[in-house]
Amino acid sequence: MKDDAPSDVELLEKAHRAGKALHEALGARVVGQTATIELMLVTLLSRGHALLVGVPGLAKTLLVASLADALGLSFGRVQFTPDLLPADITGTDVLMEEDDDKGGVRRRTRFLPGPIFHNLVLADEINRTPPKTQAALLQAMQERKVTVGVATHELPPPFQVFATRNPIEQEGTYPLPEAQLDRYLLVIHVDYPSEAEEREIARRTTSPVLGEVPRVLSGADVAALQALVPRVPVTEEAVALAVALGRRTRPLDAHAPKKVQTFVRFGAGPRGSQALVLAAKARAALRGEAAADIDDVRALITPVLRHRLVLSYRAEAEGVRDTDVLAEVARCV
Image (cartoon, rainbow, N blue to C red; front, side, top):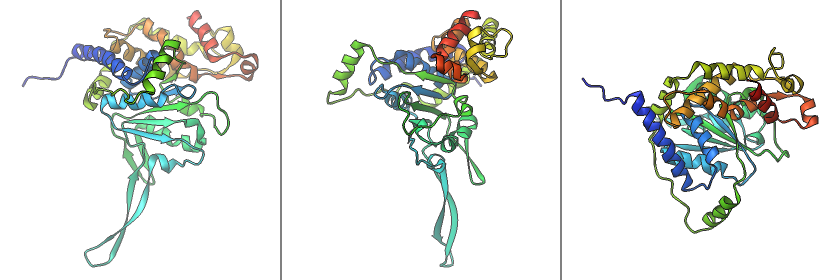
């Protein structure tokens, strides 16, 4: 019997076409943000999670919802607030009463799934809820399962979290625990649009009809492309570079640059180099390249590693940013 499954070469071509089509599809509703969209697609194909950081009004929420539309995936949104409880995210067991065959009443528990039981989940303003509630996402992000009571429930595949955070407002917010930050494959900083893009935004968003997002892929297509990414070859030089970059962010490493030794308390763990290699493979697939190389790794240094650094108080006092540290790390490797 002939196997009709597409080859990896065909899937690679499909990933390349899909990347272009998704850029165009999201562009029907969102103006600009090309770099942000590319990093979101890298996250998507890597089966990772991403944290979008940017001031209000930069279409972070709209981008995630539009991506779900373009993929035909179910979309769940959780608005994080200080009074949000873990059960509001994961769901809860409720006591139900129903008539039995003898005319009596039988009680049983039934699980009511929360908004996390979707393919793409938007955790909006995630830093507005206490760490206890933020931690409700940890098992879901790592294992793609949710345990409520004594029962464990599988999340629908594909399952990915795109969270948003406002970097300028501190009132009523809570820091994101390092253990949770490390679960995000990428932290994507969303920049202001250009002047021409902002004019187009003003025209488009004040018109009577917003652009429709066409369907580009199905859930099965997404699953096939996600399965392809780990099989994408990567050069030994790219792997060596990813590991070296991660190790150079650790202040006790013998080859760490001066800024790391002075301003970093803790550097990236092994998950950092793993994320660099996996994201590089996804980037290569989106570009239709046969293998991931050092250019793919270098293009992803900042979004992969910046949230894995814990800077010292001296860095804050002297105005040294994580991007400054990573720029020196990149120069010395």
